[in-house]
Amino acid sequence: MSRILGLDVGDVWIGVAISDELMLTAQPLETIKRESNKIAYEKIHNIILEKNIEKIVVGLPKNMNNTLGPQSEKVIKFATKLKNKFNIDIEYIDERMTTLMAEQVLIEGSVRRENRKKYIDKIAATFILQSYLDQNR
View: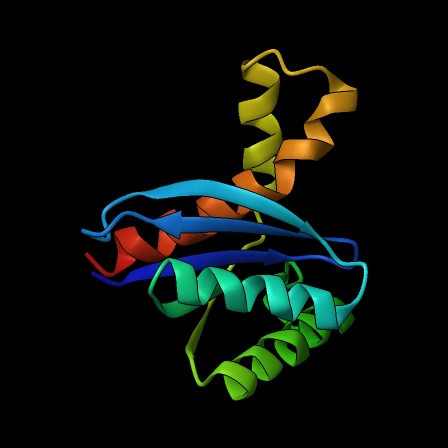
């Protein structure tokens, strides 16, 4: 059975989440350090193959007034290359509040500030993917 991947693409880290096979829930998978795009693409490609991924949902960091800024353009460029390289469907979802929500979950879970950055991106990716799954249920 195929699954959907969720990505929170940042300049240094890429948070990765994966759906269950029924496409009901999203779970955090890993955080990829963006040492180079080449390495990041390879790691994502391995996940696509290993986990039978049919689609990738990418969080789009829109401005609060709903416009796309420079960060959105970087994310679109990265995702477009993924689509072309691996012939995979890409969908975008508004991710404006996901980092704040992820931070809140970690605070409520009493995760110490210095440890939060280890988890925040993959939790944000999980919120991105879960939003998509909920909208498409």
